[in-house]
Length: 245
Image 1: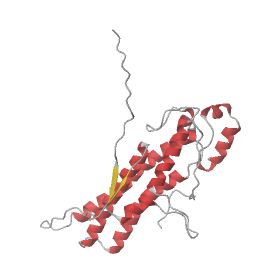
Image 2 (image 1 turned 135 degrees about the vertical axis):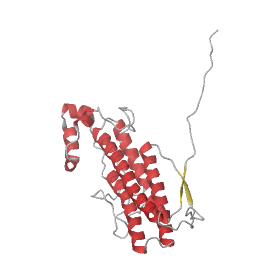
Image 3 (image 1 turned 90 degrees about the vertical axis):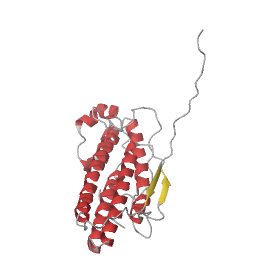
């Protein structure tokens, strides 16, 4: 006798929250909207929105979206190493504390906690960078508080870490959906030519990305026929290194 059971299993969901202990990290999470003639600064939330656009473009077989996803993945790895350099510098400074002094973690008495709704793994990798920066800032502030570094070094090191993250966000802002697929490039049609002109200043796309033989491990499956990617209105920066406010 055959089993005629129908299994109606819903989607998986999990609760993910981000806790931050410093104003410096919270400002990077929020970014800054454009105002009074000042350009806006993309925050981590805006970066995740950009990642979603890139992922949708990659799912539509746009090779430039795949290229940008790989570039961002490389930039995230580079950013991790840059933050480790600051962390190592702090290790060397705090190692000079007298052996009889023990110092605990420097934590906020009232941290902020925000829920995360991120649909792409690269967005989570950027969140991991922000938590690393939050910890670095706490360590820098503690080192200055106990007299291991001066105020100038404190400010320089905090700004150095912030630039690492904002450079990553600035790279994401340079992305534009090309509107062309690999089939367009194979046909060498008008869509492909328009896409080349759009990305002309970034040089030639690597051939293996154009052919689709190299994609990010976090790239989505290619599914043609989805709604076209819509560019969000934003005050974009012309350079990868987005400055402090």
